[in-house]
Length: 241
Image (tube, rainbow, N blue to C red; front, top):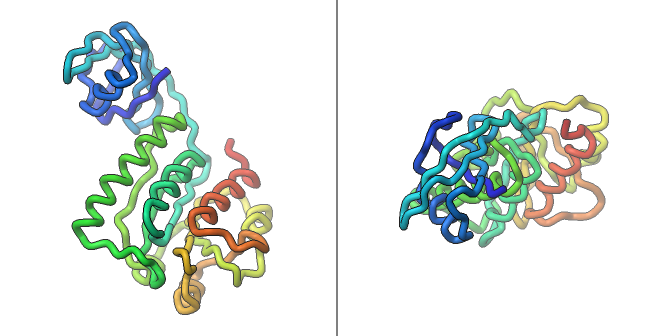
């Protein structure tokens, strides 16, 4: 059944006008009146609805059923990703959402090639939010991962956070998997460097702020692989249920 994010109040028995992008998608995939769709508004659970009318730029649906279905991880994982080149961030966000990431925190590290002005950052945020929505629709998540504003690495790492922060680094002597096997499931933030990695100065600053430095194994992973591998490793060790 096609799933769509519908950021508005939803209730059984209500006949609603679907957002324009949802209406457009319904027409593109050639759904018809009477077809069933799944809607979610990010507040938890999902709704089964029946398409009632399809007009040129307007589609309505009647909500028939609510299902309190959740597929969220029992622990919150934030992916703190140093900005990579080109469209790699799209890939990282999409796959992180599929793997259950609770939040995405873009970081501006010293070796980042990408530098975002305020205008570019606003456009990127809007685009990345769309990536989160599409990945949530596809993967069956009924809650959207939080997307934080891009922030300078030094500023972010010095903030006090209740979550355990983990920096992935080849310098580390302990692996993430080994650490996870000896600790209970908990909320964590995983820090991933850009293509050139974090600088020694950034790593030293992170250590001084209580960040735990762990490795992903003997091989050096690309920036677009490291965070996703870490998420998968935590899910494997801690379990998803």
